[in-house]
Length: 219
Image 1 (cartoon, rainbow, N blue to C red):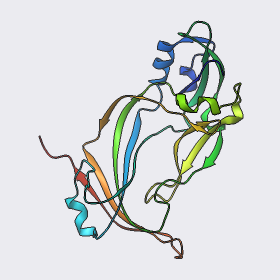
Image 2: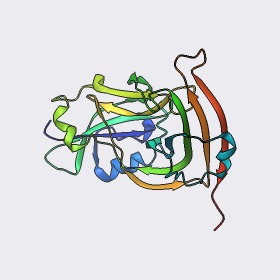
Image 3: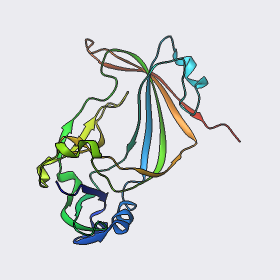
Image 4: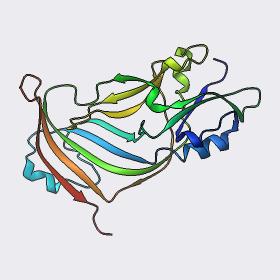
């Protein structure tokens, strides 16, 4: 592919239909997802439910092994569409290859963390974010189809930590993850710590042992 594809997720009315500059694509993306959550998962060790209230708002836990540290934008496929763009001779002029409702994309279930049995701690904090248009990382570009194919665009869904329903955790194109750089990130002044157990041999595989909301210390 001579020029990388650029992906914009926003309400359909915000997506340029034909030609657009990078600035116009960035403006459209700013009308898209602005909520996200930060998620960290740790091995619990000897942590008890009574310990949750003493854990830090910041999500730091140096005495425990971190097995997941992610920021998940809320792409919300029910209310957003996706536009696919590509530049030509003018590197700042992008041509629209495709626009369609995000809910019409292919779906794929992926495994997130934890991927094995045990007792774990999760820390989750809501964020307000701003995203730039998305692209497949440069090192994975050579693995993409030679021309654009809508069927290669996939929504990834996963069970996260102690969730009981699937969450959209991102998009891939040609099997490669699309990355949306963050322009800014502002955390909410509270976070939730949870202690949960995964036992795939039990009748109920997920047990939530306890949860505790902790607040940002006063300045």
